[in-house]
Each structure stands twice: as structure tokens, then as C-alpha cells.
Image (cartoon, rainbow, N blue to C red; front, side, top):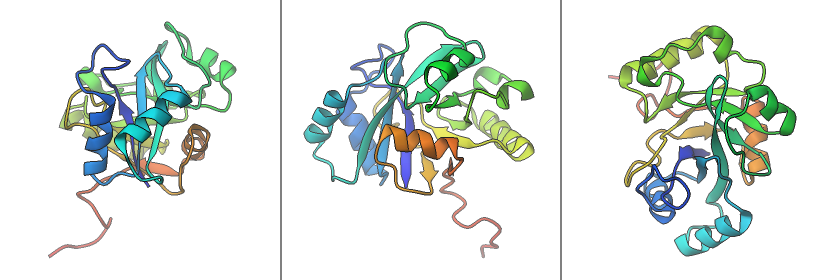
Length: 208
């Protein structure tokens, strides 16, 4: 199951120029099966998500969920499975205490040439690292892959879409069906997901 895990809409993120409806359409055009809105410190309500799904007229199996992006003491993180909007900067320890069943993912940690410390990548309170991001350069994405192979943490990818046509470029592949935010959090916490590499359909194969 391919899901866009990181996108921002103009409805709830002032930094974005793309409507929620266009984000859904972009993801559908790339044959994804779901999308997660991760607005800055704002969690979409079930009523909002239901109304958007009706407006978008997508199939029942296409999931539209909500997480949020939150500033913390180790950088921005994506939180999936929280039950309320999280205002202001918090520590990841606080996040884990407040939302023990949520999945916490380090967001675009290589952006701007940063080289996150091993202690950050393997922080006990996070459940994964976004190694592929639309906010990374190619070199930064490659650094993420190297760290993933070196440290064996759970890795995801996310487009961090803020403009039309971007959503779905860097989806994450899930081994099991995801139907709710709780499902999403559980699958990430269990490590049953990985970045989707369209360019490498069969690892280890020799192509002629």
C-alpha cells in the first residue's frame, strides 16, 4: 500500500499554496492508495476528512488521514496517531508521554546540509526517520539511505508537498492495509513500512 505521509495544504498551513482537493488529486494521479495531511501543529478533524473525501469523490479504499508536523528539541517530527493538535515546541519525551500509542517520525533531518547525530537518529522516543524528502537534495537523500543501511532504523519517505503537482513523489510503502490513524501509527511502530523506490523494482536483479 503506497501512502503519501507528509504534505501541507493551504487550508491549514500558511506556508502551502495548494488546496487539499488538489493534493488528493495529485496523489491519485500517481496511483497512491492514501494520503496523510501533516499540517503544522494542526490535526484535521474526522468531519473535515470525511467532507474532503466526499468532495474528492475518491474510491472507498483510498484513505485520507491526518497527522501533524511539530517542532521539538531534536528538530521537526511528524506525529501520527495523536488525538489533538499539538501547539508550540515540545520535547519528544513529552510527546511520547502524552501520546504513548502514536508514531513519531523525524522529519527531513538532512535538509540544509545537516548531518544528524546517531543519537538523534536512534532516539528512544522516535519510531522512524524520513530519509527521502522533497525538501532534501539528491545528496541529502543519499546520505539518508547510507544512514538507514548503517543503523537499521525504520525509514519512511515523504514529499513534504507545499505546491501543486508535488504530492505523491516520495510515497512510503506499507506491508499491510492501513485504514485509520491508529493503523498507520501501529504499522510504523512495528517497522512494517519503507521508502518506495520506483526506480528499483527488484532489488539485486541484473537488468539487461
